[in-house]
Image (cartoon, rainbow, N blue to C red):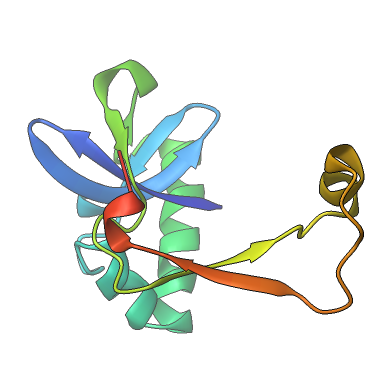
Length: 116
């Protein structure tokens, strides 16, 4: 299940992406938190509820929105911190001719780097 934040009817919604469209948790599981940060903070029980709601939406169409009716947003529109790992794929280092680092290359980005 790929969790997403998307714009639908001029408001941000949280849901799941599927081959049939986007599952809107406001409809498919109205008891779930309405922001991605709150959903993730709610923990494993909330994520399990989201997983079941997405599966039910695919079977029954509950809360399923066609892809062309939404605009995908950044999953976490305002993250507190962004940490990244450089050269996290061996092929990435090989493509650039850079030696593979002995330790992970960790760097941060400003939260304003998030778009979508």
